[in-house]
Length: 253
Image (cartoon, rainbow, N blue to C red; front, side, top):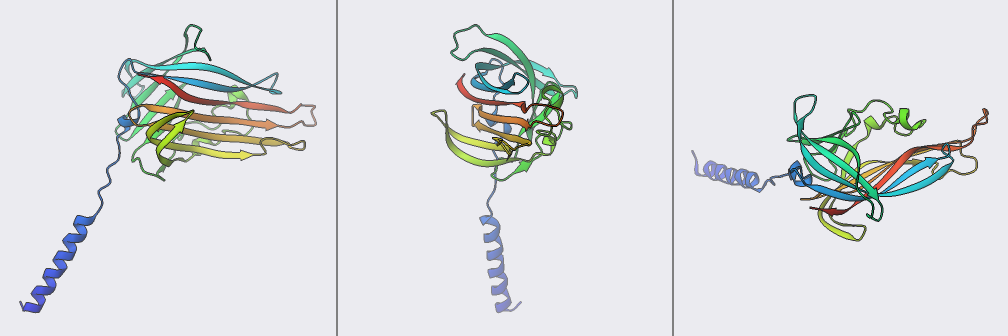
C-alpha cells in the first residue's frame, strides 16, 4: 500500500469514528417518573365542574375537592397488572366529610400508561418523552363515547382520532404553585362558534390539556367537551350539551 493511500485511509477512519462518537444518545424519562402507583399514594385536586342545568339553558360551575388514592393492585381483563385508584369527594372548602366517588384502573406498561374508567380506555402518557411526539391517546374509545350520557350533537364524536402531543416541557406554575420538569400533553384545542351569537345555530368546544410533573404525577387538567344547539323549527330552545372539568393539585404525599 502506498504511503498516500495509507494516509487517506487513516484520515477517513479518524473522521468516521469521530462522527460515530459525536452522535447524541437520546434517553427518555420512564413512565414511572410521571405517575406514582405505590399503595397509599394520593393526590388531592380542586375541581371546577361545568354543568348545564334546566335542560341545557343554564350554565353552572360546581366546585369540589377530590382525592385520588392508590388503593391496591388487581389485574385488568387482559390479565395485566393494574392499580385501583379510589376517588373521594368533599366540598370546595374541605370542611365536609369525604364521600365515595368511584374507582378507576391504571395499567402501567413499559411504553405507556392506560386508564380504564366507566369501561372507557385511554392512553394519557406514552414514551418517548420528547417535544412534538404524538400518539392516538383515545384510539380505544368508540364513536361518540359521551353522547349517550350528555346528548351532544357533534362534540366528542371523533375524539378517538385525537392526536395527543407533547407540546411543552419545563418548569411551570399552576394556580400559584411552581413545578419543575413538567410535560404538557395537548389532546385537543378546537372551538367553533363558542360563545354563540344571536344567529348561531351550532357551536362546539373540544379543549383538552393535561400537565404532569416529574415525581408527582398529574398536576393540572382542563377538559371541555360540549356543544351549543340553537333553536329550530320544532320549537326547540337553544341549549348546551356536555360538560367541562378544570382541576389542579392542592395536596399530595
